[in-house]
Image (cartoon, rainbow, N blue to C red; front, side):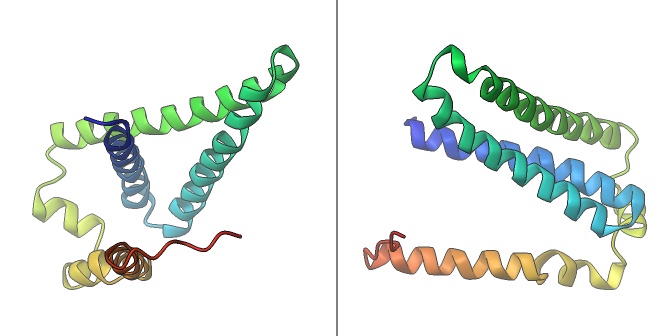
Length: 145
């Protein structure tokens, strides 16, 4: 398996575990705004990590603050990932994924398909995937800014 494929699988695992955690928070609170804020924090931490890594590679001991910030961001992300898997295990153990149980507490039965497949985020994702596929088919490159 090449390094690009490994990166993709790592991203899938990360997104899955954070999604489990955020889904749990939504089911427990019933408030999507809380999960939106937590998602923004996760994305923000990911951006910080991506900005700090090149800075770290360019220097030595003078970048200790950057290293500490990077480690703190990674620690928060790891805590969220581990929490997601722990909560998944607890739900499975309590049989909370039973359709009668989980659907009544999270999503109204008549809105399941609409909520999962036709929310604005998923529609945007579908659109971007189609654009990426078309660009790849016709060898169109993204413009550089």
